[in-house]
Image 1 (cartoon, rainbow, N blue to C red):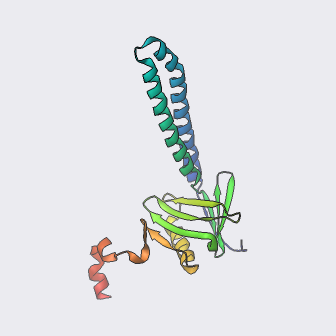
Image 2: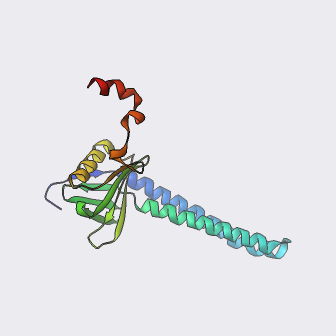
Image 3: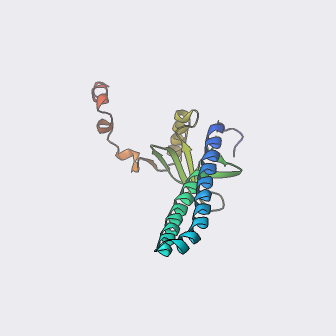
Length: 181
Protein backbone atom coordinates (compact mmCIF):
# COMPACT_ATOMS: atom_id res chain seq x y z
CA UNK A 1 0.00 0.00 0.00
CA UNK A 2 1.21 3.53 -0.62
CA UNK A 3 1.93 5.91 2.22
CA UNK A 4 -1.44 7.70 1.90
CA UNK A 5 -4.87 6.15 2.04
CA UNK A 6 -8.37 6.83 3.33
CA UNK A 7 -9.66 4.79 6.26
CA UNK A 8 -13.32 3.86 6.57
CA UNK A 9 -14.04 2.11 9.87
CA UNK A 10 -17.29 0.59 11.14
CA UNK A 11 -17.23 -1.14 14.51
CA UNK A 12 -21.03 -1.52 14.33
CA UNK A 13 -20.70 -3.79 11.28
CA UNK A 14 -18.26 -5.99 13.18
CA UNK A 15 -20.58 -6.16 16.19
CA UNK A 16 -23.72 -6.91 14.15
CA UNK A 17 -21.89 -9.58 12.14
CA UNK A 18 -20.69 -11.31 15.31
CA UNK A 19 -24.20 -11.17 16.79
CA UNK A 20 -25.73 -12.68 13.64
CA UNK A 21 -23.13 -15.48 13.58
CA UNK A 22 -23.85 -16.19 17.25
CA UNK A 23 -27.63 -16.30 16.64
CA UNK A 24 -27.33 -18.57 13.60
CA UNK A 25 -24.97 -21.03 15.25
CA UNK A 26 -26.99 -21.13 18.49
CA UNK A 27 -30.30 -21.77 16.74
CA UNK A 28 -28.85 -24.46 14.49
CA UNK A 29 -27.09 -26.09 17.44
CA UNK A 30 -30.30 -26.16 19.48
CA UNK A 31 -32.23 -27.65 16.55
CA UNK A 32 -29.55 -30.31 16.03
CA UNK A 33 -29.61 -31.31 19.69
CA UNK A 34 -33.42 -31.45 19.66
CA UNK A 35 -33.47 -33.72 16.59
CA UNK A 36 -30.70 -35.93 18.01
CA UNK A 37 -32.56 -36.37 21.31
CA UNK A 38 -36.05 -36.92 19.90
CA UNK A 39 -35.23 -39.05 16.83
CA UNK A 40 -34.60 -42.30 18.78
CA UNK A 41 -37.82 -41.81 20.77
CA UNK A 42 -39.82 -41.16 17.60
CA UNK A 43 -38.36 -44.22 15.89
CA UNK A 44 -39.26 -46.47 18.84
CA UNK A 45 -42.65 -45.13 19.90
CA UNK A 46 -44.40 -43.59 16.89
CA UNK A 47 -45.82 -45.58 13.97
CA UNK A 48 -43.88 -44.58 10.86
CA UNK A 49 -41.21 -43.18 13.14
CA UNK A 50 -38.24 -43.96 10.89
CA UNK A 51 -39.78 -41.89 8.12
CA UNK A 52 -40.45 -38.99 10.48
CA UNK A 53 -36.88 -39.14 11.78
CA UNK A 54 -35.55 -39.31 8.22
CA UNK A 55 -37.66 -36.28 7.27
CA UNK A 56 -36.39 -34.36 10.31
CA UNK A 57 -32.81 -35.23 9.34
CA UNK A 58 -33.49 -33.97 5.80
CA UNK A 59 -34.89 -30.70 7.13
CA UNK A 60 -31.87 -30.36 9.42
CA UNK A 61 -29.51 -30.94 6.48
CA UNK A 62 -31.32 -28.27 4.42
CA UNK A 63 -31.11 -25.88 7.37
CA UNK A 64 -27.39 -26.67 7.61
CA UNK A 65 -26.89 -25.67 3.97
CA UNK A 66 -28.75 -22.41 4.66
CA UNK A 67 -26.63 -21.72 7.75
CA UNK A 68 -23.39 -22.38 5.85
CA UNK A 69 -24.43 -20.01 3.05
CA UNK A 70 -25.40 -17.33 5.57
CA UNK A 71 -22.10 -17.73 7.44
CA UNK A 72 -20.18 -17.47 4.15
CA UNK A 73 -22.02 -14.24 3.31
CA UNK A 74 -21.32 -12.83 6.80
CA UNK A 75 -17.68 -13.81 6.45
CA UNK A 76 -17.44 -11.43 3.46
CA UNK A 77 -18.67 -8.31 5.29
CA UNK A 78 -15.87 -5.80 5.84
CA UNK A 79 -15.72 -3.66 8.97
CA UNK A 80 -12.62 -1.62 8.18
CA UNK A 81 -11.47 -0.51 4.75
CA UNK A 82 -8.30 1.30 3.71
CA UNK A 83 -8.67 2.70 0.23
CA UNK A 84 -5.95 4.12 -2.02
CA UNK A 85 -5.20 4.54 -5.70
CA UNK A 86 -3.15 1.31 -5.67
CA UNK A 87 -5.78 -0.91 -4.08
CA UNK A 88 -7.85 -1.57 -1.03
CA UNK A 89 -7.16 -3.37 2.22
CA UNK A 90 -10.13 -4.77 4.12
CA UNK A 91 -10.45 -6.24 7.59
CA UNK A 92 -12.85 -9.13 8.19
CA UNK A 93 -12.78 -9.97 11.87
CA UNK A 94 -9.24 -11.19 12.46
CA UNK A 95 -8.05 -11.45 8.87
CA UNK A 96 -7.07 -8.93 6.26
CA UNK A 97 -7.46 -9.04 2.52
CA UNK A 98 -5.59 -6.82 0.10
CA UNK A 99 -6.91 -6.32 -3.41
CA UNK A 100 -4.95 -4.40 -6.01
CA UNK A 101 -7.09 -2.58 -8.52
CA UNK A 102 -5.49 -4.51 -11.37
CA UNK A 103 -6.80 -7.73 -9.75
CA UNK A 104 -10.37 -6.48 -9.24
CA UNK A 105 -12.74 -8.26 -11.63
CA UNK A 106 -15.71 -5.92 -11.09
CA UNK A 107 -17.51 -3.63 -8.68
CA UNK A 108 -21.23 -4.13 -8.10
CA UNK A 109 -23.70 -1.70 -6.53
CA UNK A 110 -26.98 -3.22 -5.34
CA UNK A 111 -29.68 -2.83 -2.70
CA UNK A 112 -27.44 -4.30 0.02
CA UNK A 113 -24.41 -2.09 -0.61
CA UNK A 114 -21.20 -2.41 -2.55
CA UNK A 115 -19.54 -5.66 -3.66
CA UNK A 116 -15.96 -5.82 -4.91
CA UNK A 117 -15.00 -9.06 -6.67
CA UNK A 118 -11.42 -9.95 -7.48
CA UNK A 119 -8.37 -11.97 -6.52
CA UNK A 120 -5.79 -11.26 -3.85
CA UNK A 121 -2.02 -11.39 -4.38
CA UNK A 122 -2.06 -15.18 -3.91
CA UNK A 123 -4.62 -15.65 -6.67
CA UNK A 124 -7.48 -16.59 -4.32
CA UNK A 125 -10.91 -15.30 -5.37
CA UNK A 126 -12.29 -12.75 -2.89
CA UNK A 127 -15.70 -11.13 -2.37
CA UNK A 128 -15.70 -7.92 -0.39
CA UNK A 129 -19.14 -6.73 0.78
CA UNK A 130 -19.50 -3.15 2.08
CA UNK A 131 -22.98 -2.80 3.63
CA UNK A 132 -25.21 0.25 3.30
CA UNK A 133 -24.97 0.79 7.06
CA UNK A 134 -21.28 1.62 6.74
CA UNK A 135 -20.54 5.14 8.07
CA UNK A 136 -19.94 7.61 5.24
CA UNK A 137 -21.15 4.98 2.75
CA UNK A 138 -21.93 7.57 0.08
CA UNK A 139 -18.40 8.99 0.19
CA UNK A 140 -16.84 5.52 0.30
CA UNK A 141 -18.89 4.20 -2.62
CA UNK A 142 -18.07 7.26 -4.74
CA UNK A 143 -14.35 6.79 -4.03
CA UNK A 144 -14.48 3.08 -4.89
CA UNK A 145 -16.32 3.82 -8.15
CA UNK A 146 -13.84 6.60 -9.00
CA UNK A 147 -10.87 4.28 -8.47
CA UNK A 148 -12.56 1.46 -10.39
CA UNK A 149 -13.19 3.82 -13.32
CA UNK A 150 -9.62 5.12 -13.20
CA UNK A 151 -8.34 1.54 -13.45
CA UNK A 152 -10.95 0.61 -16.07
CA UNK A 153 -12.67 -1.99 -13.92
CA UNK A 154 -16.29 -2.81 -14.85
CA UNK A 155 -19.00 -1.32 -12.64
CA UNK A 156 -22.42 -2.94 -12.39
CA UNK A 157 -25.58 -1.44 -10.92
CA UNK A 158 -28.18 -4.06 -9.98
CA UNK A 159 -26.49 -6.61 -12.25
CA UNK A 160 -26.23 -4.37 -15.34
CA UNK A 161 -23.26 -2.34 -16.56
CA UNK A 162 -23.78 1.26 -15.51
CA UNK A 163 -23.29 2.48 -19.11
CA UNK A 164 -26.52 0.68 -20.11
CA UNK A 165 -28.69 2.34 -17.46
CA UNK A 166 -31.47 4.59 -18.69
CA UNK A 167 -31.53 7.49 -16.22
CA UNK A 168 -34.78 8.87 -17.62
CA UNK A 169 -36.53 5.58 -16.84
CA UNK A 170 -34.98 5.36 -13.37
CA UNK A 171 -35.57 9.00 -12.43
CA UNK A 172 -38.43 10.39 -14.54
CA UNK A 173 -38.69 13.48 -12.31
CA UNK A 174 -35.27 14.61 -13.59
CA UNK A 175 -36.36 14.69 -17.26
CA UNK A 176 -37.22 18.41 -17.18
CA UNK A 177 -33.95 19.30 -15.42
CA UNK A 178 -31.89 17.28 -17.91
CA UNK A 179 -33.73 18.88 -20.84
CA UNK A 180 -33.01 22.39 -19.54
CA UNK A 181 -29.35 21.69 -18.89
